Image (cartoon, rainbow, N blue to C red; front, side):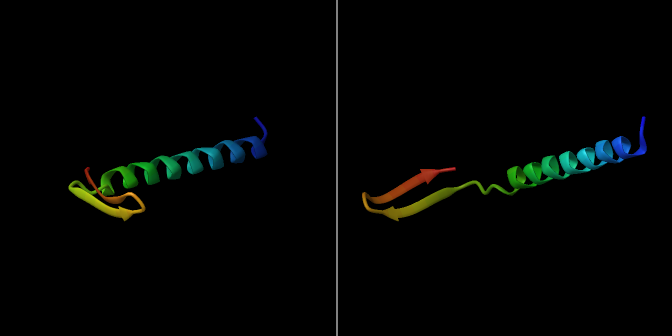
Length: 48
């Protein structure tokens, strides 16, 4: 296997790991509770 192909595969693996790690981080950082928003239709309350 050529060295350039090996570097390409290694780079793709690093990028995929970073993306999955970031997605996991975002999922863990979601806060539970209430979300209150005020818009054109009035006040909206959602349970998270």
